[in-house]
Length: 433
Image 1 (cartoon, one colour):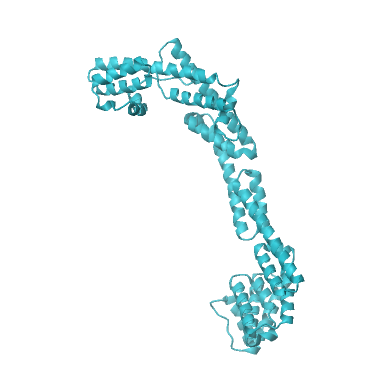
Image 2: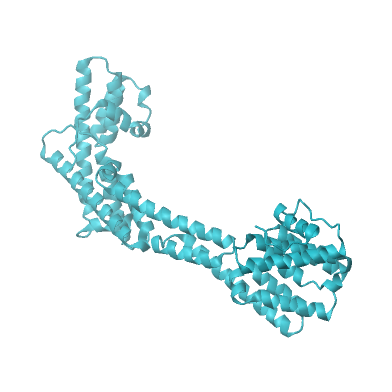
């Protein structure tokens, strides 16, 4: 139990501002009126108000003799106030079962069930202890006063130890980290000095570091979901859940992945139904939507290959119009400029060269540029060389149709333009760097 220090007028003036306001406006009263009112409060057992008025009178007192007399009365009222608090704690405690200290978490953590009467009694004990600990009564001998001090110290220590124990136990269970953090937070609110000097703060800081790490992994997972990297996102969420399962963002992210997986499945099923019914264009549209929703599943199901077959079937059944070819060219160019040359190749390859007419020059130019982009981003090897050969073949076909055709320097990199210019000047087929 902490030792109670010396009661000072300065402390009372600070602590009892609320009492002054509640009891009226003693600042406007004379010294005599203040003393008489304080004496009346003391006789009526309103010790808190009596101390407040004695404090105000002490400020207006001039002589040291008068100050000494007022201070003596103020101390007597303060001690009686303290004793009363001890008695109130004893009465409140009588409403609690044996070992009630374990109930402290029930008073602050709503998920724990506890009888309302017990919770209310415990909260009353806490309130009274906090009020008593705010008083700094002079340590004079007296059975009643010493008993009150002992009661307050014992109850307060029991409360702090119980809450610390609960916070630590919650922290050992990875599914109750939020409850642990909440309990540590309440412990800090109840007694900041105890929290800082006796060890809870160090435990709390480690707990916050763990929660922060789990939150960071969950945030990374959300970014991966935004980028449609569902498999990597799921792995990040597994890591996050092992560290901080209570994180609501983990469950929200998992729900989002499940929703997008479900959406992919629905779109794929709609595409398959349209394909079976002979509506190839609708099937192609549904498959394309599904691919955008979940690229990982689309790759697993070879959806891109199925879309190429559909485009080929559509082209054979109905030669595309010039407007349709232009739209396909624009889609392929957008994918290429947007940094997805594989998608550009997929779209542009589906355009029949024979049907392109005057736009075949652009078709071969864009295909050559797309093949070149894949070649330039591939590691050294036979596959890289194959991409270059495809690019050169397209550029040669383009030049055979229009020898002076140029690639836009705003859209295509110097490296791609270099491949074209080498074909234009000497027909070289040496792989570029």
